[in-house]
Length: 352
Image 1 (tube, helix red, strand yellow):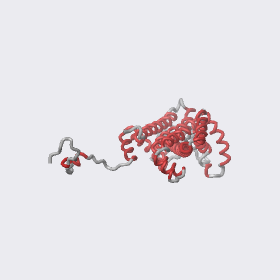
Image 2: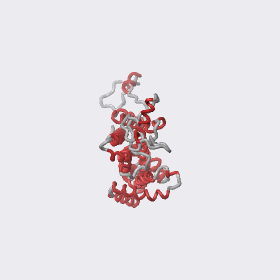
Image 3: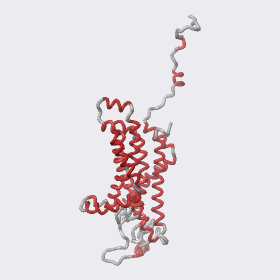
Image 4: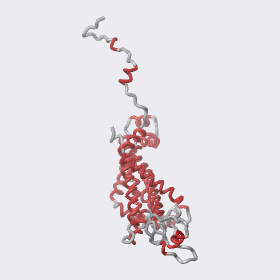
């Protein structure tokens, strides 16, 4: 039957089933994936971020495993033997130099492990002190960022979800903290808290950690959560009016359940990126506080305290300042580049 030009009848001949070849040509099948897998693929394509990640991993693993087999300890003063005169030939050794006792042992045919970075003014192996200082700086940066994440996420979530007067009060507190001079407040709080905490932790397990480290964590919990809370608040303000949140409210869900099950998981990518960028800031803060003498307690080394101790013999032994400065710069630069790579890979607003 011939179809009339102006007829509204459907031409059945045009609906012939497609062949397998037609289906393969017209349908481009994509393997199943997730947001995390797609982000990892984009991250691996960023060579700078990938190299920075491997540098961070190598530095972290080195700081953990090297002290296990290194023959020298970070606190052992070479040449100091109870009941015998102090052998000052171990002090201020240059890289791969040996003390007089070690030279005698080498002449006798004994093998002596070299001092890769030399020794400091107290006769302690400088390489293992740099390794331990790196471990302390990384640990402080990581745990301080976790503290900032917990405090900032909690306060930001409450402010963003509740709104109203609660949001107004929290944001005014954030504005007040933002108006304070960071460096001055960190130094003052570290100095004041150090004397208070010293009395409180005597005879406890926390005494081994040291008063300065604990006070540093408290300073981060008091001052450095404001940026994280503002970020989380902004994300939740844009998410709380979504349909699934309104449906949860209509079903009788409580605010805590909505925040933990709906709002936080939907802004987790921003949280991860912000936390990754917070770690180098925490490391830098710990380094300059240790440089000023408000960081880790002696004899435990930190990269900042090593740089501070090196100022006394800067003209004669500049390597003692250069080495920890290079390590700090490498860690902070790698973490910043890796954080930028995470932002480019996981932020949905920056990729198509």
